[in-house]
Each structure stands twice: as C-alpha cells, then as structure tokens.
Length: 142
Image 1 (tube, one colour):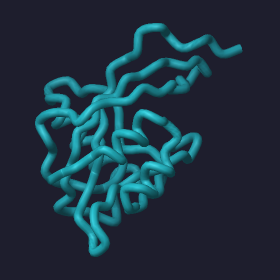
Image 2 (spheres, rainbow, N blue to C red):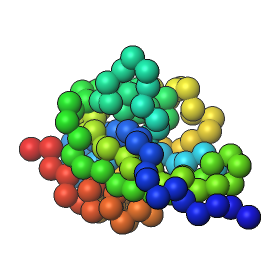
Image 3 (cartoon, rainbow, N blue to C red):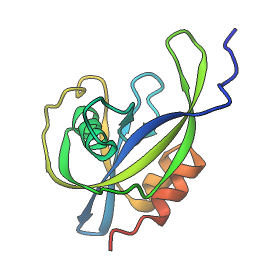
C-alpha cells in the first residue's frame, strides 16, 4: 500500500515555455511519461547549474525547446509525485518562464512524451494542478 506524501515538499524546478503566436500568447505543454497528463517540463535541481539553468535543461530534454530563461521564478505549485516504489512525494515546483527561440523535432525524450502549443486558457484547462492552472492564467510576459 502506498505511503502518504511526505509532509515537507521536495524542491523541484520547472520551465514554462512560451511564445507569441498569430493569435496571442501560447504555452508549450508536454505529457508526463507515466500518466500522460499535460504538464510543464520539470525536474530535480542539477549539481553545478542554477535553478533557471536546470529549468532550461529540463525544457530541452522534455520538450525539445531552447530559449531565453528568466532569472527569477514567476511562482510555483505543489503536486504529488509518484515514486518508483509507489510512494507519493509532495514536490514544490518553482516555475521559470522560457521564451522559446528554437525547437527541434528530435530531442532527448521525444519517444517518451508528446508536446503541444496551446493558447493560455487551453493550457490552464489542460493541466490538473489548480495552482499551475492559476499560474498559467496569470502569466504576463509583457
């Protein structure tokens, strides 16, 4: 039987890939590997990289995009990560906007994930985490 989530959230970082499309602001979401739900690229901090640099690395590995990463987070959200042993681990994700300047059709996790550009409202509706949904709706790159 899975254990309840740890009371103290683990620290993760995430990137919010965005661009200005013909119809306005668009955000790039990817599917998670196991549950296939829509999420932003995210992961654990990386030794030798700042949090923004690690977020940009996650965006490349999980979504195949590169660009200009913000140096400060725009906020964060909490979710429960299912670990390999079935246990849940609460994670608090600091989110860094990444203005996409380049994308590739072949990237490290291309065979494991789908990606899709979505208008802000569609992206906010597609994610399951209420805090992330609110963050997407409030994001203003102005």
